[in-house]
Amino acid sequence: MRTVSFAILVSLAPILFMSLSACQSSRKPPSTAAPLTASEAQKKWQASSTKHNGYEMTYKVECRCEVIPVVSVKVDREGRVQTVSAIPADAAPSKSEAMTIERLFKIVERNKKGREPASELRAKFDRFTGAPESIFIDPDAAATDDEERIVVLKFQFAR
Image 1 (cartoon, rainbow, N blue to C red):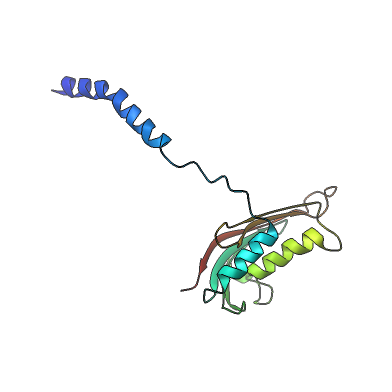
Image 2 (cartoon, rainbow, N blue to C red; image 1 turned 90 degrees about the vertical axis):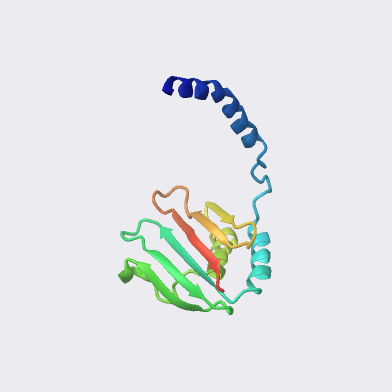
C-alpha cells in the first residue's frame, strides 16, 4: 500500500507543480507606482490626518548613540504628544523631544533645503497616508559615522 501511495504521489508531482506555478503567475505584480516625493507625501498626510483622532507611532533613531531606544508616542488630533514610552524606559525622550509625523517632515525639509543641506538624504513615505516610513541622513559625505537613520516601526491612526 505504501509503494502505491508513494507512486501516485510521484506521478502527481508534475501536475501539482504546474498548478502552483499557474497560481503564482496569476498574482498581480507588485506596484510599480513611483515613490512619493516629500511634498506629495506631506499633502497626502495633511489630507488623511484630518480624518482621524490622532495616531500612535513606534520608531527608533539609529546613530552612533550608545543606547538606541525604541520609542512609542501617542499624538492627538492637533498634533500634540500625549504619551511617550521607550524600551529601555530610562531612554525615553521628553514629550517635546519625541518624534511626530510633523517633526519627521521638518527633518526632511531641513536636510533638503536648510542652511546646510545634507550630502545624502533618502526618505520613504507610505503610499496611502503619506506618513514617513524611514529617513536616512548623511550630513557630510567626507565624515565617517555621522549618518542617522529614523525608522518608523509601527504606525496606526487612533480609533
